[in-house]
Length: 285
Ligand code: C2E
Ligand code: MG
Ligand code: MG
Ligand code: MG
Image (cartoon, rainbow, N blue to C red; front, side, top):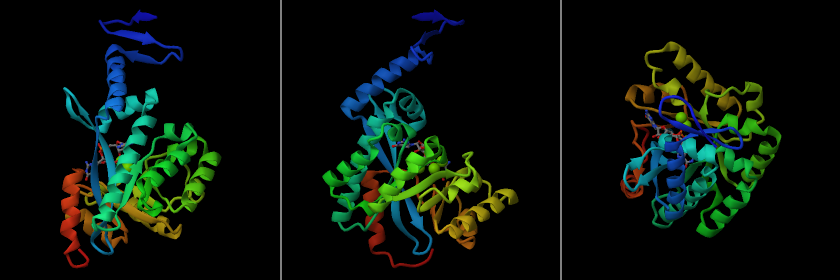
């Protein structure tokens, strides 16, 4: 049933009392079509290993090539995709395509580039995420150690015991696990040691002002030290300047990701970036 909610916007009340505007419903319909027509494009953002100065992994970041609205960023459709459950189908398309690309880079001699894919809580709730990953690795032929899953603390916390078991299982297959946006969640540090992850990604909110905010710099240093004590790798996201890079290197951070290295780029551009570095000597930057 529809109900007038003031102004001239109609709001629809659904079974679960979730409220959606007319525009949202229209967007949801076109999102369904987009899955069917596969209108998603993956951009890749390089991550640089600070030990070697080389790009050793890339993060797959989805965009929607909308027929009339152009290239849409995830913030325009991921929230709705999560809410409507369509994120599972989109996530599967992204995983499939990203693994296929990574396998091609490997075959083309562009290096052992690990590809990271963001997972949403909905994909875990469905309970078949391990089967989907197995199927994708099998059909694309990508070695498991070249796939990394990026998860958030809140995703793991949602059903902690069950998710930890599942993550441990994925990890025994050689899949890499990273904790995304670290520092923005609400989980207690005592949980962190139970999370079976290989890498912590420090949220960019701490990095952006670390050169002017002593507090942010102190937090970043503490996260790096803590991660190392827990035998985890640590990388910083949102690195935009040489000053950030210098500070992070001095703090012992293992890797960086951010506009200073590269913005997310289309796959063809990434190939050029990877090809360019083949001939570069391995030096510290
Ligand atoms: P995220 O996983 O934390 O990805 C990093 C985001 O930070 C990306 O935004 C990237 O473009 C941006 N970024 C990277 N370096 C810098 C920098 O130096 N400065 C600034 N200001 N921003 C930087 P993007 O591509 O818009 O993605 C936003 C979020 O959307 C991602 O955050 C992730 O949570 C979500 N997302 C993207 N692709 C997928 C996907 O395939 N599945 C799911 N479930 N979520 C996705
Ligand atoms: Mg991520
Ligand atoms: Mg992140
Ligand atoms: Mg983030």
